[in-house]
Length: 379
Image (cartoon, rainbow, N blue to C red; front, side, top):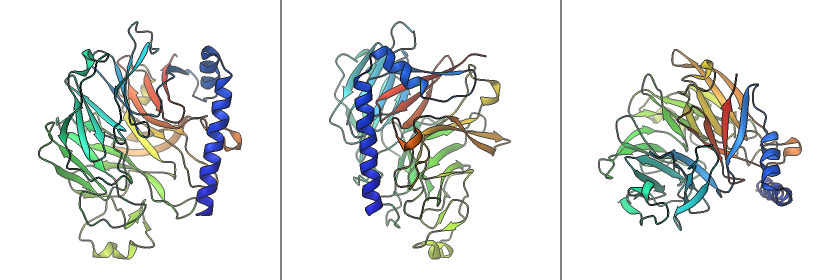
């Protein structure tokens, strides 16, 4: 626990230094200095789309081009507009406030759905009501109230259903309710809940393969097994009901010291990760890139936002990574964009989610600095 306290102190000191540095910069210089700190491959540019979105988490795109953003600790949901279409935010609206960990949002037919721990809420016809947003209506309140891993990433699948994960209510435990450590889906009106994946410790990002339609998702590995164990995971749900190992097996074959001996008593086959990720990198949002702006080699490949470690003696993550696939199998796992973690382990940003825009550029949310970046490519 002593190392835990030291990690927290270092984290807050780095935040304080960041705020002191930012306070002395003009908006233009601030934007330039921030983006110059980021390292992207040749031909790629990272600019700031919006610089004042406190604690920005999951992103969603509205029909009118409005970008929506959830938050976690801020308790707010935002709408970011770009009226002149120059890919820089004109206004940031707070469209919902005083919610419990409203990290996850999903847009459908003009309505914005919000995941707030035990509740799924909806803002009706939100695109035309940004200046005077409606009160959220309740879709369901049947999800667990536990706050540990209670914040959610939500999204609508190709089947029109809303996919809602429920993390384990602990670091490591064997929950007595099936809904924990799972991914569920519901109808848009909140009915018909069913669990489609088990053994998922805490996924905060998923997307559907553009060709097979399979659900792929990130999963955060357990803590306190050392710096290099276990790996975090990228998983592929190829059929309903698969079990991904938690709390018995981590990664490909690491038996949990507390629950691993029970694995043989479980009458199911565990599904191995499609790709083991770095240990404690905290993978959150992920997308299959389907646009035309980035090089063709990125088409139908995976980009992952790694939020970064908090309990490792040397920090890791704080970057965007790329997983390349061939014939549905992962073939490589590489850094795409980094720089949010500086030498000396100073942290000034933590990527959370990715969103592809209509022109093929990609937005990245950063809940540490309250920034949304835009990634473009020019050959």
